[in-house]
Amino acid sequence: MTALYIIGGIALLIALILLLPITAQIKFKDDLSLKIKFLGITVYKLKEEEKEKPQKNEKANGDTKPPQKEQGIFAKLKAKYGFKGAIKELFDFAGKVINKIKPQLLKIKFRKFKLDLIIVGEDAAMTAIEYGVVCGIVYPVLSFIDQNLNIKLKQINVQAGFKHTESEFSTSFDVKANALLLSIIAFKALKEYKNFSVRNEL
Image: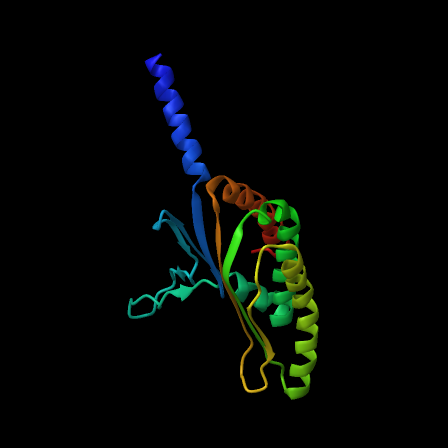
């Protein structure tokens, strides 16, 4: 009987842990940055900054070359498709993930949602044209999120960068849910990301 009590106690403890709320802080600029907090303590941290690549070639004097930095996901997409194409790929991916995990998303809380998107073309005319195209990509996804999910899209900044020299994109938000629910979401999102990664050769 003692063994059964111990096993039952352990099972109950695991169940309670899985049902306790966890906060995931997600940021994306050039790459994904993720921090997971449990009871106010950071238990996992992922910061995919530009990684340095070691150089095998050496200079004549024997000194090695400065290490190169590996590009993040967005930089790779931008190099392959251009800024507009990179945004299209990312929001297409986001839309597919949302459709896959919509039942789970309805049960969790989103906070501090921010989106900054500045579109800059070769000149003022191209800036206006590309701004219109990017809005056509971004706003249908944002509209779907606003109408169907428990997310308040308050800090959205999508603008034509007439006074800027370079296009910019970044987003961040906090997610609060229990560990079991977040695990299901992560599993489904990862499967979709694998398809996205293969398709874009990341």
